[in-house]
Image (cartoon, rainbow, N blue to C red):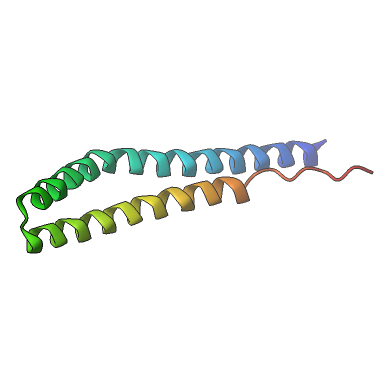
Length: 91
């Protein structure tokens, strides 16, 4: 009986960590989203003015922030997937 209780507690802690990591990743991306929108607008404005140096600079900043956000989200989804409870094989 004690082993079943320990297994249930370990599973619930693992599940809480799993959901916490996913929520943290989504929250981080959501927090950075307004900055990404602002950088996109700055890039489009520089593109419209024809300023090549400014356009390239804003494009680089936008790419780095976008890739970073996607990497954080991918790591959160991967952690959520790999920490899922294992199903018992049919006997």
